[in-house]
Every structure is written in structure tokens, then in C-alpha cells.
Amino acid sequence: MTVLITGGAGYIGGHAVLALLDLGHKPVILDDLSTGLSSLVPAGVPLVVGDIGDRELVADIIRTNNVETIFHFAGKVIVSESFSDPLSYYLHNTIKAQSLIQTAVQGGIRNFVFSSTAAVYARSDAPQVSEDSTLRPISPYGRSKLMTEEILRDACLAHGMKFAILRYFNVAGADPQMRFGQSTRNATHLIKQGLSAALGEKDHIDIYGDDYDTPDGTCIRDFIHVADLASAHVSALEHLRSGGGNVVLNCGYGKGYSVMEVLEAIEATIGRRLNKRVAARRIGDLVSVVSDNQRLLSIGWKPQHDRLSTIIDHAYRWEKLLNAK
Image (cartoon, rainbow, N blue to C red):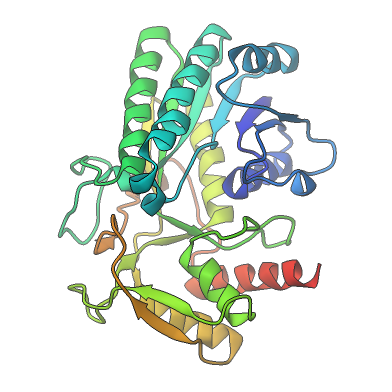
């Protein structure tokens, strides 16, 4: 089976490529390399450098490679940036995604697996959010993703293509075999930033607000290992291919850690203290976002790396590899 992976030279898409290869599937990558790295694409995997909004190019890839399924990862992902540059987020995450979906329908694609986000949910005091929780994104990033969810849902219902929408919580870690990891410069992920400080790439780590209504005053997030997230995409695809219905899935472990708890776990891994500084709250940050992941578990997904210490250890090993190059 051939799977087209948009953004397959990037962090999460690259791990999905590995997961498909490990199961004997044939990925083909479309990536504009704005954040992805061609040097990390596995040998023998076709890489087409181009834009997901180029309908002729996408149609040619589908036709030439007999593509059956699309995993759509390509897009812009920084919540705070989406407030200062919303039009770019609507262009890349919604308008170009609509073009990709239209080309997929015209090309006879059977299954479309979409990379969405927990940022589509409303502010909530609930300990966990389920797929049926209120959808009211507070950022242009979240709205751009929710719009695409709706476009995909309507297109699939009209044309018979099947879909899985995966709503990510906080993604971290690296491939356990060290074949891939977070390599994007200036990535804003907490664990990436903390390890950068640990390795001397920056002199401190910012904590964006310590006055939230949480036990230690810092935001709480549900972290998922990137390899487990990649396997969730494979589980979603197997669900669709085995006759399962269209599905929306929260991708997390159902457990929250505060920013301070994560930084303390990093300190335990590296064996020394980080230089931590409290900064102003960031626009768009929610107090607490933790997943109800029962629906994902119900389709047969089984996490393999669901310990915070494991996530940090794999990320740390990858950062040291990057530093050695």
C-alpha cells in the first residue's frame, strides 16, 4: 500500500514514515522543506519537493504512485505566531488543505488521515477533554485546523472518501532507534527548549506564567511520545481499512504534567539544575489541557513509550546527536 505523506520530512510526519516502513508499507513524501529536512528522509523513500496547494503536482504524485491513502501533516503549528500572522495560518492550514482534499477526492483516494490539534477545544475546567467536548478554539491556529476538519468531514461524506482526524496534545521525544527527532531550529516545544538550555544552546529556559490556577502555578499539558503518535496514525488507518467508520481521535496519554514538573524531570535526566526564568504569559495558552484517550485505545492503539522520563530521555539522546554533528 502506498501512502502519500505531506510534511513527511518534518518532525511528526518523519516518524510516520518510519512507522509505515517498519510495517512494510510504501510512503512517498511531499514536502516544501520550509521546516523539514531532506537529509533525514530514509534511503529509498521518494521525496517530492513542492507545495500541497499545487493540484497538478499532487494529482501526478497520486497517479504515478498509485496512492491509496493520504497522511496530511504539512502546515504551520506555532500558536503564538498565529496571532501575529493569522493570514499565513489560514492560507497554509485551511486554503491549501482544501486544495489537497479536493485533489484527493478527484484522484480517488480512499482514506485521508488528518493531523489536527487539541487547540480546537474551548477553555474548560474539566479534568480531561473528550472528542465530544465543546469546540471553540481561541487561536487562529486552532480555528484554521477546525475549519479544515469541517471541510474534510463534508468532502468525505459527499464523495465517499473515509477520514480519521487526529487531535494532538503535546508531542515530544524522538525515534527510539535515533533515526529521527525534532531538528527544526527555534522549535517552541517545552522539552526541546529545556534540553537546548541543558546543552548550553541557550542560557536559560522561560516559564511563561507561574500564576495560573494549578498546584504549582504553571500550565498543565498532556505529553505524547512522537513514536506513539506515529503508531496512532497507523492504527487509525488500519481501523479505516478494516471497515471501521470515520473517526475523530484524541492523541494523548490522559495524564497531565505541569511546566515545572516537566522541567524538574529534565533536571533529573541531565543531573543538574536548569536556569529557569519566569516570563509573561503567552497569548493563547490554556491553563490545562489533558486528553480523554479512550476512543483511541478502543481501536487497538497501544502506547509503548508513555513515561515522561522515556520521552525526555529519547529527546535528550537526539539533542546530543544533533550537537555532535
